[in-house]
Amino acid sequence: MQKCAPPTDAPPQQLIDARIAELTDWRGERLAQLRALIHKADPDVVEEWKWSIPVWSDAGLICTGEVYKAVVKLTFAKGAALADPEKLFNSSLAGNTRRAIDFPRDAVVNEAAFIALIREAVALNRSKAK
Image (cartoon, rainbow, N blue to C red):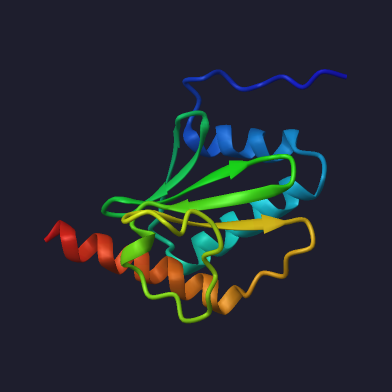
């Protein structure tokens, strides 16, 4: 059975819901889990749909959510400027601006460290917005 995609002018939340629903394996579950943690970390987060992927913002871009065959990747726009004491960043480490976290199927999410990282990204955005 073919799934009916929402129109491209649908609200971003609906497009993200549809993306999660179309991923009928572990990747949809992982993306939904990470989305929930982002909302827990920042209840004021704004969900957007850009570049055909989910984007989370608050006073600027926090991160994007990309889905690949073997990983769900969250790319933090200003990741290089964030402290990462728990070493969550494991991808895109060479650049001067962004950093990413690849979550393979068997990854265990350190929820406390992830929430702290989201909050730090929001704080950085807000400090730059002033």
